[in-house]
Length: 111
Length: 468
Image 1 (tube, rainbow over the protein chains, first blue to last red):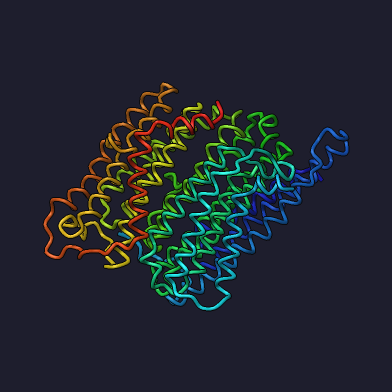
Image 2: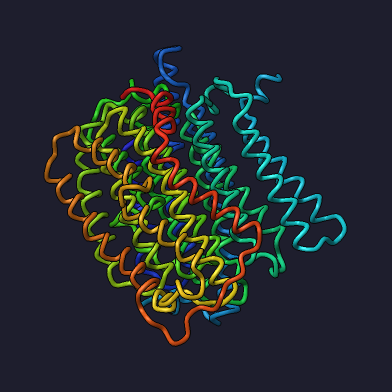
């Protein structure tokens, strides 16, 4: 399958994530949308990694082997998990102090 | 083996401190004062050790590289951390969770070290995340205050979003070049449209972290809500670390795209200076005021970067050093006053000179340095930045920047006027200065005056930076 399909899929997912972060007001859904963005990136990296592996097979030692892209994906997953765990802890703290997870309520800090 | 350990000496030192703190935390109960003394001694040792056993080299297939310039940058950051730690003595003395505070703070410092040393997009990304995720937890450190959790929420959402953008850019960069290693990227960059687009996304990620104008909206809220010590860490150390990396990445990895990023920097720096200044004019909360003033300062730094010469990278590192001293002196006074009286707005500082003459003078010198009044180092820093920017002969940019320096005088000196001239029925009462914050403030003042007048500092940095 040509690489375009993967790229279009990943870009679409990424855009949905971005739109979600910018428009949704529920903090948990905002975090889900950030996850969507990161997973779009993962898809893209794996697709590119396969692409570079193909050129590597064709050209022998000339191209990059394409392994580093797949490795990157694992690290993104780990970091995303860490980010969300801290984020959820902060949401819990916010719920205790504000009694809501709606980010529209976060307007105490305005002049 | 020993050589590999020596190459990573600063990272290992920070890891060692984190483990010592963990062991102390698990051991018998200690009073906060003993604990703070131990931590500050360890941080002091860390700063001192940073200046010895310097070596140069790469490790782990260029994942980690180090050279004297990076060691200097890390030393600047550890010095800043030590100063903040000493300044927050009064605040932490009565706090319940001191060990956790330092463990989280030092993990972010470790992340910044790896980010500076990273020679691979993966390593750079991991360092960046390690330096932002714990910071959000630290921003929530006044656990019962609503503002604090609000600030943490805004910080984690905006940093997660920006790292998403950064990663998307990185993945496209990987797709078009097939490599993640910094030293191989320049040869593979040909300026195709997809690469420019990837670079724009990367730039957006960076701009979020250093709060450049279209991406600055989180800055003021987070700075206002977070505890003051965390605010000063955010505005000085984490911003400084990202700036160091930004310069080195633009000047080495993205050198083939120099034409593209010059135009972007030109626009961003204009917007950043003007909007940062305009918003700083009308702030009354001291932390918000310093937040917008720091946005404006980053605009000046971007002008220095846009010069794309050796002078550019030298002046940026030099200015960050000065900025650390002057901003930390200002924040040090605010930390002390807010820990004891809880007052954080500029109108509270009216008549501050009557009750606290020493603190008033320290704050004044710091604000003079931030504004760029000649005998202080801030003047020389901004002068070199504008000199570097002028190398491109873009006179409009330099003129607007110079005009904005005049505007910035207005709001910095407004605070000085409030301190010295305005009358107040209930001025801030006399604030006691324990030994540690006093030492830290004196170090800042010496730094503000000495880095400007002793030309050795500038020459030393210049000898380490690489020509463009």
